[in-house]
Length: 111
Length: 114
Image 1 (tube, each protein chain N blue to C red):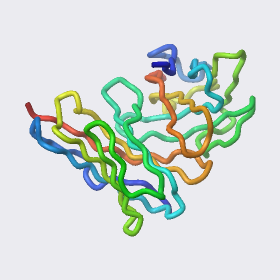
Image 2 (cartoon, rainbow over the protein chains, first blue to last red; image 1 turned 30 degrees about the horizontal axis):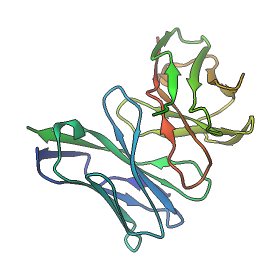
Image 3 (cartoon, one colour; image 1 turned 135 degrees about the vertical axis):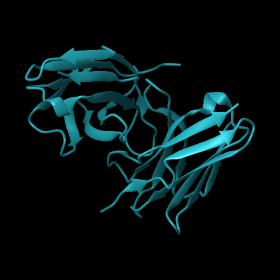
Image 4 (spheres, rainbow over the protein chains, first blue to last red; image 1 turned 120 degrees about the vertical axis):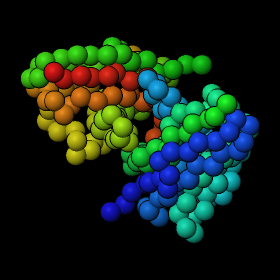
């Protein structure tokens, strides 16, 4: 079946290092992708999105890369800070279909 | 920055009872959603709502569930005859239009069925 999944369930990084969180998707019809950050006790918080006609998009300290050939999405966080510790979800959408979330990766920042 | 607000933050209910979870979406948004997240699992879509009717629903959203927009600001999820397995975080989300636009989420209601 079609699914959105993550390669690594947990990631630990030193403060100041760059983080890379990966996501695989299997629905080739998906045309919109979002990264969400979820802190403990909070709802998913929008970080960055990318449409399928792009392969890279940058925000403040974050970059999303999309490789449609291998159906892979990644989130890069530059100079990771303790406040970046959270669970990160990728989500995909095809047309007006509901958002499909991946399982999440827990990012732990070591001070 | 405008945000989606949900009440209560925590709801404890006896099995078999009915619960109503409340949400106030962002004021100019037109599309509304409910999601569920069982502890430690991914966020799962329940239902989307537009123009006062359900536009899509998942297999989870069976006859036990209903949604309503009783006035111009609130969006509610009613769960009848609650079961132990209904225990989860329930998130409301909204956006201005469907399709390629991020949905904005509230902080959720933790529902605990005893």
